Length: 221
Image (cartoon, rainbow, N blue to C red):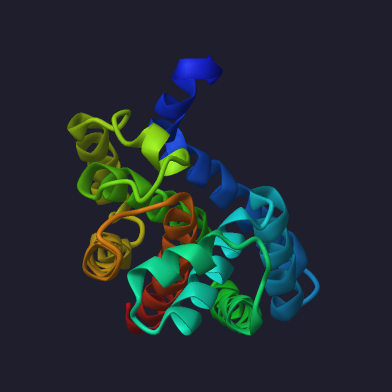
């Protein structure tokens, strides 16, 4: 697939497929580490998760946390802080809490030997950027603006169908559209649009929400 030049934004249509590859990698890392013990498996999965994504989405979460903490409901201030490359205390805390939450939830899923469930989480979360791009206006001329016209309704419908089929393995994965919609609604009300950082933060938060939901699901079923 050619993702150079004008074709690059169209690569976003394949974000969920990339998520599935990421999921298979972290599931494999979790299984390998769990041969020692569940906590080692959780750590291996988390390290693989961060390395394979280059901590890109954590950076978005950090920027959004700093902006939320410093803006005091001032939209222009929010956007200015979010564009600042420096990491503040809110960003550091957000990254720390996110990593702690993920490793604890990963440990629970590994104890339940939910390998297939783990593989689905990054896939489901990456349907979010397609929906947010289709739904929300770009906040500025960045990656989100380039992707804005590349996502078609049929792309979302197609991946939603795959998500529905995956519910045969993990029924609680169907909470993903709710989490995606909630994040999109917050962005719409708070900012009136979406940016690359918003996508990254959203992916992180949806992934953690799915980890929690699927862990609950493994305990109930």
